[in-house]
Length: 238
Image (cartoon, rainbow, N blue to C red):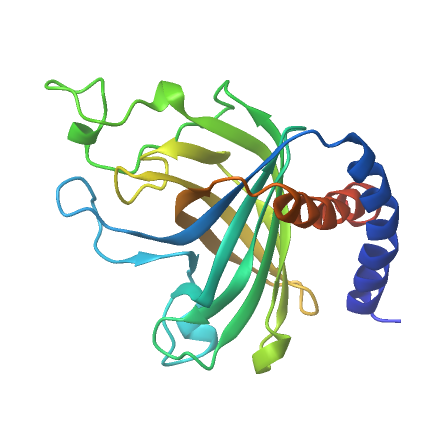
């Protein structure tokens, strides 16, 4: 059995266990619609916008963009009160919509205390509240996820299967935390490992988050289903 099939089998079997456990213990969830974080003309250092940035992608697939956005179905971000979260959706390339990835990214270890290397301030200095005059972004209000793990599955369009893991500053959430504008959003930095070749590339996430009111059970089901990936990571992948 290949490493990919092993991973998928473990994810399925552990989902049954973790799903039953999480259903009985989870108390509250929040669900957000996810959009690409677009550059603010006043505060952003760099133009454009994306959900996922794959630094080396045009080298691997000439003519493609480094940037990806969610398709017309959009993406979602689920937060559970146990300190975990889940980002999911189908990504399409900005220059070639036939290049598709299914993104599934899990977060753990939510904290309001900035971990080492955090926060990462990517906007112009005048965006932040400690500037004179003060800007609209106060990093003291941000929170973080210290553990990031997931998958980028390109099988729908004949692309590789990648494992994702966090690196550098922690995944950060808050007003201006997306590094592109002064909306509520998030950003994070990733190692993107080809499951079969072992090659590791660079990636990052830059997103706007819009709260879905009264998400309730639908968000719970999404959060529970992806708790399995955290279980797989801790038990079998490390």
